[in-house]
Length: 157
Image 1 (cartoon, helix red, strand yellow):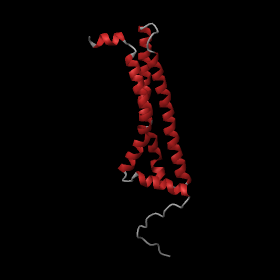
Image 2 (image 1 turned 45 degrees about the vertical axis):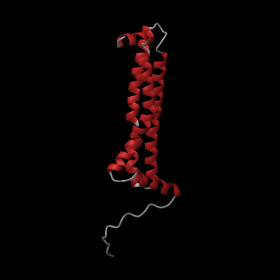
Image 3 (image 1 turned 90 degrees about the vertical axis):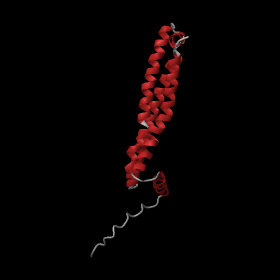
Image 4 (image 1 turned 120 degrees about the vertical axis):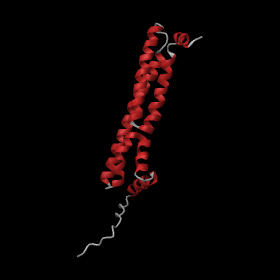
């Protein structure tokens, strides 16, 4: 039995598989890669809906509903994850501005690209995630920001 005959037997199969992959990507990709992962999930979700509608037509309404529902659910989750990443980024930026934290302010925009985007930018700058967490803990504890390192030049009076 060749592939074309299998697809003709179950035209809804690819739609459902693509929809499930889109849902997985919407959640995991949204957390790890932020708006980029969510965008991929939306594209896959739309593709799953299209394939599901094609299966509905091919089977006279008997198959294809699962792919349509999975694709639609993936789009909803992807939109939610995009909102989550944008809100997280704005919250970090607000926290940084209110508490005069240049460390957090520098990485607030990277948060919209998910946890991987944030950690990759910090790694490129030579800052560990523990240092960022220590800054958040300092702010939560309400202690003052550490003084900047002295450059060795003394001011004369």
